[in-house]
Length: 401
Image (cartoon, rainbow, N blue to C red; front, side, top):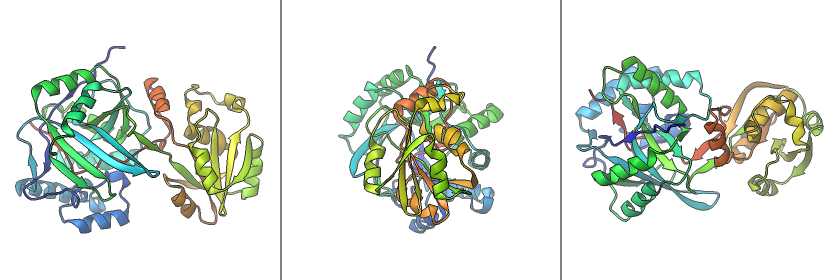
């Protein structure tokens, strides 16, 4: 297969450094992970918090457009005077371990060899479509991964991490965010050449990618480089931390009835939360998950892999716990109402309350994501969550004629 990935530097738009010495009070997480409580907290930090641009209160997109234009006119947001790659690092803690993840904010051609890995929902796409039409900009990057180490990217990180950054701040989640500009032509050329030899996998931002591609098809003659989208490009590195996405569902049956139904296919045992946490970290090829109900955890292991033979799907899918949960486990049970999702066992316990069941899953491996995406398949919704999200309000990309 011929690789056609193309990235390029661009003139980013960002908060005016002469007005904002730090982005701590104005940056925010991506639109799709901001709940009402977090939104209220972020809005209190500054009247210029980026949530005022990426979220339209009560569907008032017109006000968002006017506000965005005002911020540009008042030089709250300014344009870079030179095309750049923006080297972006995040330092964070997960499960008491400290990680760092770095990548490039660049423009990525949408005809490139990009493999989405997850199905998308209609409602978020409609909202993002209204936003992009209003502001005529990519406000958030999509998050893409080169499924192998990129030496040129790592060389650039080693070099620039010793230099004074353009921006450095702690976000509302306590993580360090550091940004450098790469503007030297020779370095840009080397990075482009290295990344352009690779396929890419979309880790996050599937809705944004599809909306940007749709906008390009409808407006291709109005702006330059509209076939490119703002993207955060990283490679396979230890800082690519993936969290599981647990499911909480209301069931018609009792806990005893559910365990009896599943007992034909799974070994079941009550387990403490401490032992469960260790069990979930154990990597093997067996399908295992936990069930939480009425303050008790139960650990379930599939007795025989052959039980899943009746599922008509590629073997790669059968390595995916979310797929097996939805295609094998849940059809055995009688759920009702909408499924609720969370990445935290503590929150799953809280949501489950007295009448719901929490299905606690292991995180999907990076290798499985690459394998499924490379085959052109897509994951069930809410299968992956890369921690942390790439923050919003650091660099955006305006469309230009």
